[in-house]
Image (cartoon, rainbow, N blue to C red; front, side, top):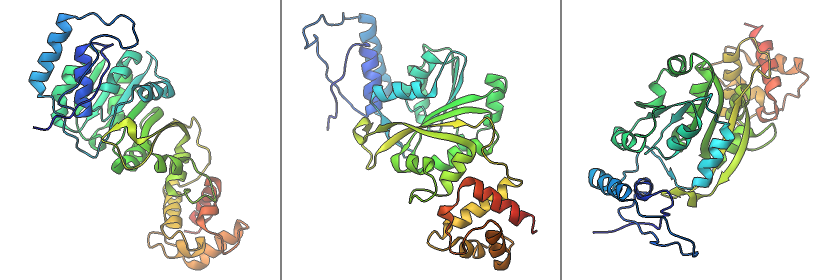
Length: 330
């Protein structure tokens, strides 16, 4: 049998070490029976030791990584996420993908109420165990993309804006974030762990190679700010890419006025689908846009732009202006 383990701190007790080892996917661990720095070791609590033995017996000390997740193990990063989100006892927090509940515990200690949505049913018994001491946490076993989050905000926060915190699976980051914004859910801010490359794209402006449809979509709804860069060694298993914590603070007022936001985003997507083409050719080749090449050329000229300009050079305000001009040509 292969034993995979780690060295853990006993400062929070034996049961806490067991829960952390579960998160790491370990089936053993070691710890100092006395503090190696010379100070007094933590007293043995028989009840705490019994809780650890019970935890190991019932859960087999195995944790199956699934759903494309990489589990965050650095407590300093967890604290940064809580701080960046500005969680207070007045807040209702939606946590997406709580795993075994490590970050959920931090949230519960700081928030008024936490609604944790976990898709993996195998994690629900562990969440019941790790969150047993918290009466302000509601766990829902469901796919977040199928959850009526607006109804959750109404039920648990009286329809007032919620805060969203998550360590998102990288393959589904964009659908989740855009789904939250586009659904009209009342949101104060979204603080999430994402792939570093994705975080960079969210905050970039015109002219950058990272600037694109995601940048414009996020910036239309929120003010993005990268609050921490997180190296691969903060996760188990180690991802092949760097990560970042980004906070998306919802605009109280939209940064631009546009008559038809849906049309604007069609134009934006068409502009970046063929990134190396000019804006005029990119829009002209888009089957979802009902405009002739002559109409597109006229709209670009009306804005005072050169016919050879590319979509990556336009700001959000310019895309809004272009949308309104083309919209009037229908």
